[in-house]
Image (cartoon, rainbow, N blue to C red; front, top):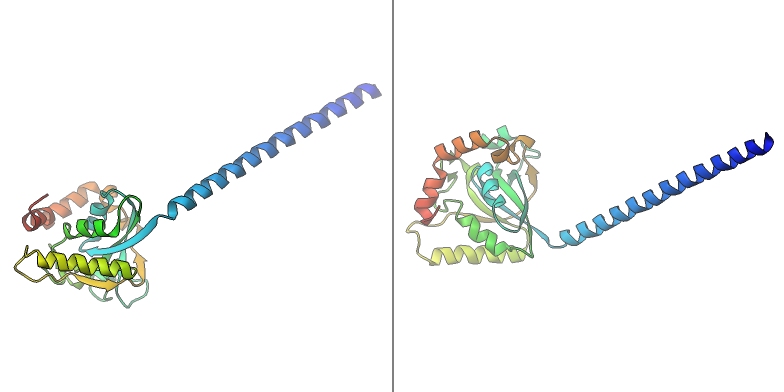
Length: 220
C-alpha cells in the first residue's frame, strides 16, 4: 500500500511539473510574440508624419483624405483658437477662434507632404474667406497648418505656384499658419461619413460641395 501510494504521489508530482513546464513555454512564446509585434510597430511608426488641414466641414475633409494612398489615419478636431478643450457647439458658434480641421498621419514611404498639399487644394474653394461652400464663419475657413520649417516652405511654394498658374482671377485667401494645440473632436464626429453614410451624403450633396469643386477645378 505504501509503495502504491508513493508511486501515485510521484506520478502526481510529475504531472504537475509537466503542466507547469507547458505554461512556462506558452508564456515565453507569448512574450516573444509581443516583442516581435512591438518591434514591427516601432519600425512602422518611424516613417509616420503628421499634417493638419482645415477645409471647411471636417466630416468632408476627413473623408477626402482617407481615400489617399499612404494615409494611415485621420482625426477630426479643432485648432487655432484660444479656448481650452472647446466643444463642437462652441466652435460652430464662432466663439473660440478655432477652425474645424483634420490631422492626417501618413506613411512618408508611400506619400509626402507635397502630395497631400496637391490633394488638399482640390478639396477646397481657396477663394472664399471665412467660408467653405454652405458652411459660413471663420471656423470654416481654409488653412494649412505646418508642423515644421520644411512643411511651411512647401506650403508657401505650393500656394505661390497656384497663384502663378493664373487659374483664378480672384486672390487666393487660404491661410498658412503654425500648428498649435489640436483638440480631438467628440467621438461621434470621427469617421462620421462611415458611421452615418446616409446623413453624410445628404449633407454633402445639399451643401453643393462636389459640384462647386468640379466647377472650380474641372474634375470630380
